[in-house]
Image (cartoon, rainbow, N blue to C red; front, top):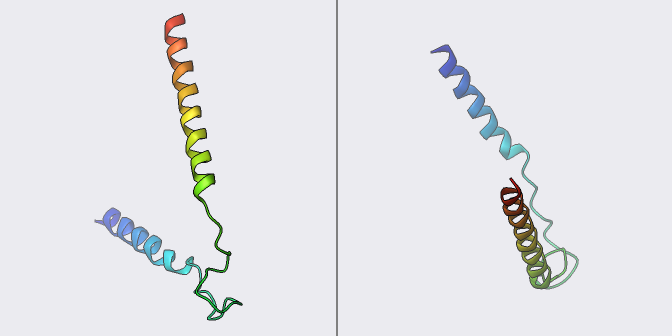
Length: 73
């Protein structure tokens, strides 16, 4: 029973502390007249495809290394 209480208190402490680490709301006026986010309107489309491509290349390389290691043994 003591262990259950300890786990319950630990879980409650973790969940309640998450609210304290949250970012505050942005100020009402971002410095411009429209509803644009404070970071500008930067597009992430091109960078996303580069990131996905590099991830596929890395995974392919690891798979190739794994298979070549199995063939050598």
